[in-house]
Amino acid sequence: MKTYLTGLAMGAALAFGCTSSAFAGADGPIEPAPESARVVHQISMYEADELLATPGVTFYDVNTLELWADGYIPGAIFFGVGDWKKLLPADKNAMLVFYCANRLCQSSETAAYEVMKLGYTNVRQMPDGIYGWKMSGRKFERP
Image (cartoon, rainbow, N blue to C red; front, side):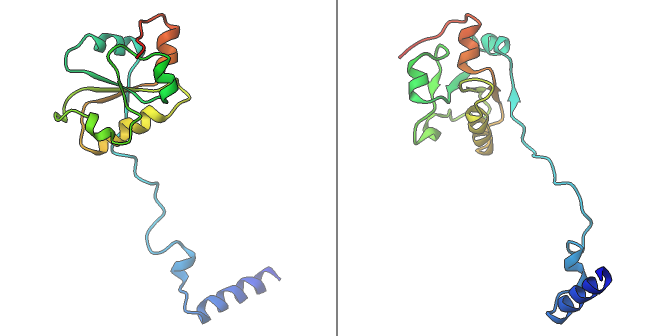
């Protein structure tokens, strides 16, 4: 019975102009998808703390306005605005550090990736976010 149904399906496919390559996934071999050429470089809170005192490094807070108002890394720029591209420096080699709430939040990784797509080459992301920063006892500011 199985052979009969397979033959029937092949016959129907041929009758409607389908070729056998349609069943095999076209002409090429099955290969894994290529890895993304751009990977967001993650840094620890310790590394971020060291960069905080470095001239020319800009921190971006990618949290909601409510979280921003509750505290942000000193000197960080609120990134949750409609025209965020205006917040970026002209120098595409400048170091930019993005963070959001914590390791469960993906907003800073998404923002960092979008900035990299614009050609910025020195982009970092701190996955511990503002909650990790505050819990570690580091200083923060409020607007």
